[in-house]
Amino acid sequence: MTTMERMRAILDSVAWLYQTHTWRGQVVKEGVRGTERRYLLRLDDIEGKAVLDLGCSTGAESLWAMEKGASLVCGVDRDSESLRVLGELAAFVGYSARVRHSIQDLNRPIPEFLKQQWETVFCFSLVHHLGYRRVWNEVESAKVVYVEMPAEARCSDEWFEEGGWMVERLGDVPSNREDQTSRRPLWRLSR
Image (tube, rainbow, N blue to C red; front, side, top):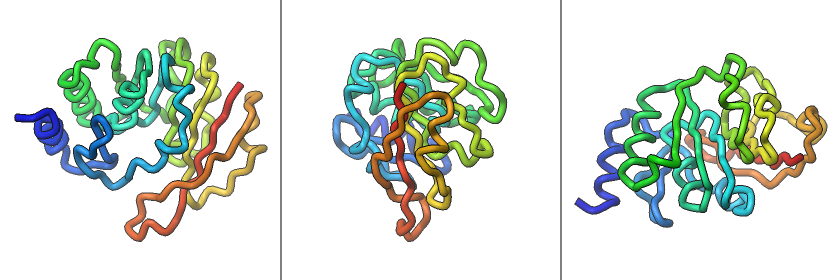
């Protein structure tokens, strides 16, 4: 069995795949969401950095960050099945020593162990599930945060500036709606 076939078999164990997974630039398995946001992320925010992926699902962006040179990644989600898949994929491709995962309900305050050591935070398609809580402000060590908002959110730079962040809107990415016509804004926050 090839690497792609084995990865696909691991992903096939999930009833519904939200994220599109890739390996070495090739699509392993298509999910509801594509990979368009990756083209807007700055690699120097990932290379050599400790990355915290809040609401990671099956870890497509976590594993991609490892491929792009992250020193350490922690995927956080409340779904144990999704985190099982992330763990299996990370072990299979040899990243298990540098990819952690943690079951957390992010509707609650972030636990202490997640507040430290993370330089870059991914917060994709999560904030609306948290009642628009600025969860990234709880990660005290974060230097850069990428936030993808839902298409219907009407956020401005000022909304993100709480916590002393410099704000940059990077662009828009397709939403997960069937028609793909609505777009989700992607922001980069930095200290």
